Length: 544
Ligand code: F6P
Image 1 (tube, rainbow, N blue to C red):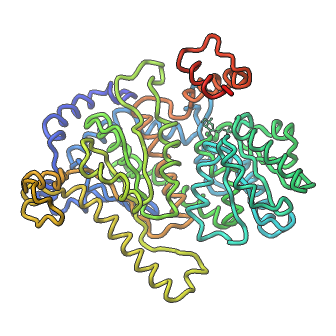
Image 2 (cartoon, helix red, strand yellow; image 1 turned 180 degrees about the horizontal axis):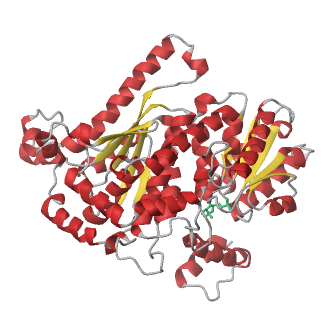
Image 3 (cartoon, protein in one colour; image 1 turned 30 degrees about the horizontal axis):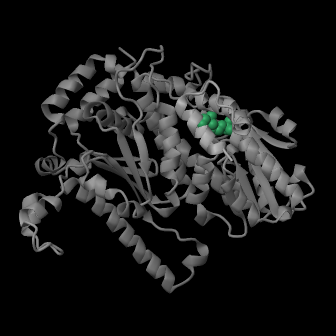
């Protein structure tokens, strides 16, 4: 038994399998030779149906990948994670975001503390919603990274469950162009600021919080203690900042896994306590699936294994995420932190340099917008980029709109168009079009001088481009909770098999330290000791 996948004897078997049939695998042929392929390679997990059949895998590939997972003791390591062992070994911490969504009374670690914290946070959210703290029309959430991306993504995704008279704004960038336009439209008397920072030391968040406070006082705000609250595991620093009401949490909640904790306060304010609990319940259902489903049907495990197959055998270095729901347009950005901050690592748990690729680049845009931007490259470019489609069966355009008769019919029709586009893209990626097929078509705008065969080559598609499609019945707090938890566990699976620590982020530290050193030089213009490029750029930026 080994814990790093490339040291497992199964790795060599997978290499041989790749050379024998993986490299030349054709998804179209696989469908021709196996009528039951969709049935065998589609999977049900709580709230999420997953079609993996348009991937370059078959039963022998999956069997070997599952052997790899077993040989690397994936289940043992999953159980250690869920039990609360200090799997984040470089920071000496447990990683227990799953405990945040365990129901009251369960035997999950820290259940009593978690429930008390949740009740307090939700009661506060309800008090804001009910006007118990004065009439609040706008909530400005200031945080960055894990203290922003999750809440911002979820609030947008669950817009149909929110209230029009209560607007949520998210400010993250240290660039004042983020904060300024938000403040410009606000009335201090009716605004609540939530300052979210696990450490309460993050430059961007503290700068925006200071600026927001200055604006609040200048705009006639009088009761800072009532209009500023904090969510942080460093409540002492929040108090030192002048915030009386601070909701605390624990060091075993990683920043990018924290939307389930008090960092989710803006979600609770936007959609209410009951919906927040629904989101936790959806995530918990996925946790149970991950903890108990046999590996052969365990969706986070299967997705993680296919990720490894593509990253380390096929050499695909990126994955595109295409949510076909406008509410999920921030999901790719959220996943960038979840996956790339977690698994963008170059050494194993013992500090040995890795000889294999880890986190792919994760990127994307909501469908259908991405189709009119970069899908050209996905279809005809020289790189193969697996695509992950997310389709939502039933739309929910929000209460006001649902009642608007004819408009509703039009929007429902648009939803059919959306779904047709989603299906068509994965179909086109797989199917492709040969030059002969293109030649047989009547080219619409062919130049009179261009050879027909040359044109056909421009108009052909290689096909055999892999994709996964995830299907949700509807985008609800519960299904969204399950979907996010699915991604979290998938990231754990790949990180565990690569033998890395998915839960630290030392890679962000050097830039922060250098920024602190450069900051005074932007006033003084001093370039002494800097490399030539940085010195030249600094002079360019500060010279009068
Ligand atoms: O980007 C580095 C990071 O530490 C993230 O991991 C974290 O989510 C983000 O900064 C914000 O940190 P904090 O919540 O402590 O302000």
